[in-house]
Each structure stands twice: as structure tokens, then as C-alpha cells.
Length: 160
Image (cartoon, rainbow, N blue to C red; front, side, top):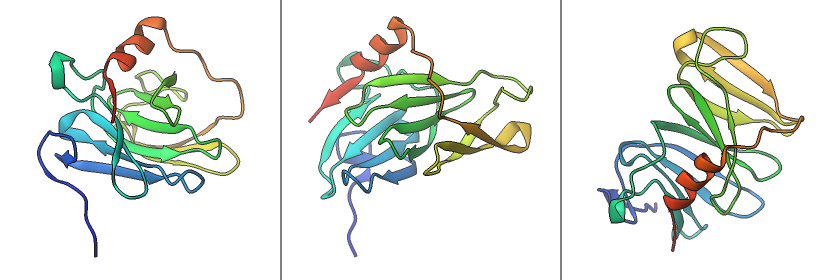
């Protein structure tokens, strides 16, 4: 048996790691570290590659409440960020898109959790507070995030 990390907020530590996904093509591992408001990328040996949302150096986390993570067939990393959005990153931690808006209508979400992306680019997730499961087709073009959002996540990205 093997394990990585201890409880805490430093590099290599976690506080309520709630979601994990492994990219079978790259071997990269992604962990949602809820109480540290961050996403951690590890290599297949457990070495930290990068962290988004680490609050070192006075940079506050751009995450609201990250809960789950999944990898798409194209290698994109999907992170549910409650209460109302799903963030999409590339393998290097760059923000690619922001999906969703809060509400109860068919195309809206309220506390997404438990993400899964199928081989045919369908995003499945539990829309917890709306008491339903949603399935979104990701084959179309994704919206581009604002420059402000891109910069917030870029400022909170630390490479190791």
C-alpha cells in the first residue's frame, strides 16, 4: 500500500481531498483539495506538478468550492466548482472554459458534483440541489472565459 500527503495546506498536503481523476494517456493525476480551495496536479509518482488556488504569497483562490474532477477524452480537466459552475482546464492548468450558471431551468445548475466525461464527450454530473442528474453534450465549441477569469486562475497557478 502507498499513500501521498498528510493533512495541511502546504505543498504535498491536503485538507479534505474530495475528488481525484487520472489521465490514462499522460499519467497525470488531478486532486480537488476542497478545504484548501485548490486543484492539485501530480505526476504518476505523486510529485506535485502544479497547484491552482494555493493561497501562498497572498494570492487568494479563484475557486468558490471545488468538489469533483474528471478528465475528458481530449485530456481536458473538468472541475465542479459549487455553487454554479464547471471549470475546464488544459493539462498545464490553463483555464479553457467556464460552463454553467446558477438556477433551476434545464440548462442551469445548482451545486454540481460527481463529474464523469464519457468517450463520446458527454459530461455527466449530479446537480445536487436541483435533485437531478444532468448530461451535457460537449462536442460543440466551448465558450471562451473572460480575460479577467483567465488572469485570476493564471495568478493562482504555481508550477513545481
